[in-house]
Amino acid sequence: MNIKASTSDIKRPKQGGPVSKSVKRSKALQRITLIGMVLDLALGAAKIVVGTIGHSYGLIADGIHSLSDALSDVLVLVLAHVAGKAPDDDHPYGHGKFETVGSVLMGSLLIGVAGALAWDSVMRLLYATHLQEPEWPVLVVAAISIVSKEWIYRATRKVGEEFRSDLIIANAWHSRTDAFSSIAVLLAAGGAMAGVLWLDIVAAIVIAVLVGHVGWRLSLSGLRQLVETAVPEESSLAFSRTAEAVEGVEGLHFLRARAVGAETLVDVHIQVAPYASASEGHHIGVLTTRALRNAHPEIADVTCHVDIEGNNAELKQRMSVHKKYLAAADKLPDRRQIESKVREQLAEYDDQLVLERLQLHYLNHQVEAELLIRINASSPAMTAAAPAFDADDVKTALASCLQALGVSDIRIWWRG
Image (cartoon, rainbow, N blue to C red; front, side):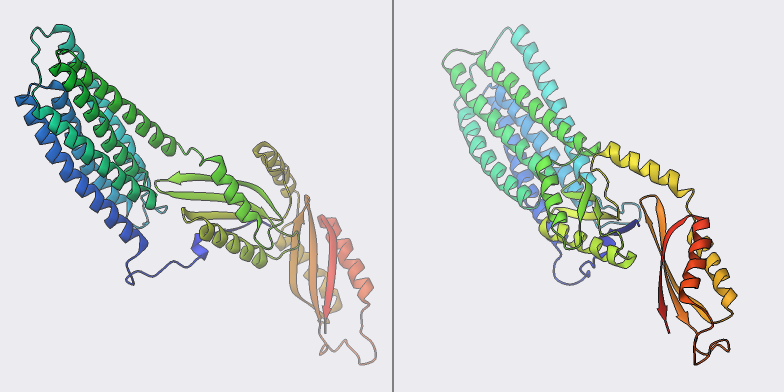
């Protein structure tokens, strides 16, 4: 018996009531990103202007970095808005991967900016003939940048962690690289003012390396999600423990989970009692789905597959068992064949016996049948003294004809 229970069995909150969690999340992400964008634009303009006037190429490079932050903020705003949309026909699992795409794009942008800064800085270091000493306003702007960018990093990361947004956390780290680069500018400008002029250009190269490193990490993290890399092992173990604790679950064949943006999708195979009905197995599947979503808020969707035979949890073993089952299934009779044979056999007793229910169990590459047969007391063939049939003879006859079909065992219940 294989049935499926997913989040479609769990009622979702109606729209139009109190502010939904997704709407609250979207507004919080947009608000912190807008604050960061305004700060990046102001710092970027100030760094470029003061760097030009104060003869600090390192501060100019830092200003370009800040403007790249502002550009990434625009990207975050757009993608966070798209990712916050509800599932639709084209995106039944939601739009969470737009956040992941945003992380990859942002990482690629940072790598590009880093490459351009590094190339220009190296050329200046190798071929510049006249290096000027930075002036004191460069130190002031760099110090202001360090303090403000560390503040926005902490604020942005807090929001990102609260709402489990990889995109916002990535943007927070983008802000912190700006703070790190401003520290490099501050130290290099101080050294250049002390007479070591080439330190200012070296600072620009250090900034480029920092930016490129963060860009690589962001791109790699996003790509891992896009290629369906599994969630960390500790998360999978926690999900497994939750599923195994559900009443009616006798074992867990396997569980796999993958991240889609800030959310997680889970596929789980549970084992229930061999003779559980389809409706009971479905109910246990719904309980498992509900338990996983209640215990782990990051889970957005659960596909729960219900099995009635214990298989090895390893993938190769499961596939081997499945192939053997498929091979045996081709040889086993289906419901139509069995029911037709039962009714044909009961017809020999005129209208004394009526098949009311037939339940089949496909277990261990065999099929077992349970029959509920109603005794038709109003049949002319029935007498008050004794029935016109013998129950043992009926069972023997049914067992004989069904075993010829491939049914391994039958059980009969009578109802008068």
